[in-house]
Structures are given as structure tokens and as C-alpha cells.
Length: 193
Image (cartoon, rainbow, N blue to C red; front, top):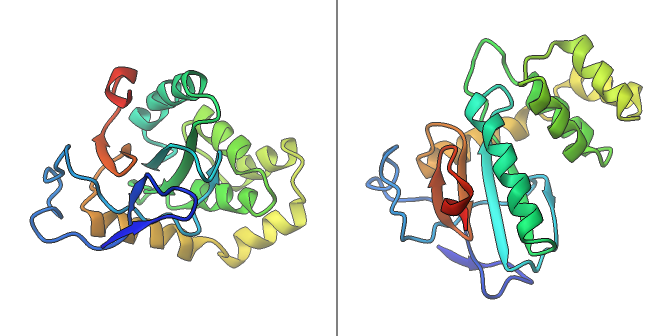
């Protein structure tokens, strides 16, 4: 299904199910424009930006961490022209979803992007005291932050991100969609451009 997002009449984004052929991990057609779900995901940048980059990422993934430098370069290269959308795909069952949930609890207090930066800086290897320390450093209301983590407030949102990634056929991180076009892995800036 093709949808035009309000304010992005020239950008077709992906939202929906792909057929079985495209659901294969290696089955992304680099020339196709995929519909990528955006609802509920942390976003920044103008909603009518000519470029929308959706990233499925994992804070503990070293390739995702390396890709952050490229994304920062893109932001400097295209100031005010990119809408950034972050989706979670934690791949390590041992680490669970603490980092992802902490980022969303921070998002609820308007601090997703600084929390994202801090979680990548520690490679997502955090325990409860570590995320609480980061939250305190960022000036979050700790009682609310702790309550969100205790209640598992954002666990369903993380699970939804994982489910939508699987529906699209994403099996690893990082995975990007640039105006709906797939770009898998930690690629150099020229690949994004």
C-alpha cells in the first residue's frame, strides 16, 4: 500500500506488508520504494523535509554505533532537510530491551535524542542503575522514568518495532530506509547520498 504522509507530498514512505518474496532477509530491491511505518516512533526534523531516513537500530550493535558518525555527517550536509525516525530492533536476547525502553521513557520527557546519544556512547551495555544515572544526568524526572521502566510502559512499543521490522523482512541492524529506499548495514556516506 502506498501512502503519502501529510506534509511530504513528494516522499512516499513505507507502511504495510510486503509479499513473501520481499520478506526474505536478502530480498530488498534497492530500486524499490518501500512503505515504512512511522507512527509512534521518535522523530526529529521538519515533518515536510524532502528526505526521511528511518533507521532500525540496536544500541548494543557495534555496526549501528559506527553508523552514527555517518548519520551525523549527513545531518551537517543536509541541515534542516532531513526528518529522522528511529525504530528499535534489539537483537541480543541476553540484554533484553532495557536500553530501548529507557530511550522511550526519555522520549516521553522530550529527551530521546540525548538519551540515544548516551546509549550509543556506552554501546547499549547498561543495567538499571546505569540508565537511571544517564536519566539523572539528562535532567529527567527520575520518579516518572523509574515508574515507566518498572511498569514496562514501553515494552509493547519495542515489541511493535521488532514485529514491524520482521514484517518488512529486516533481520539485522542497522537497516535504513531513505525516502523508502532500503540501505542495509553500516554504509559510507556516499551510499546515503
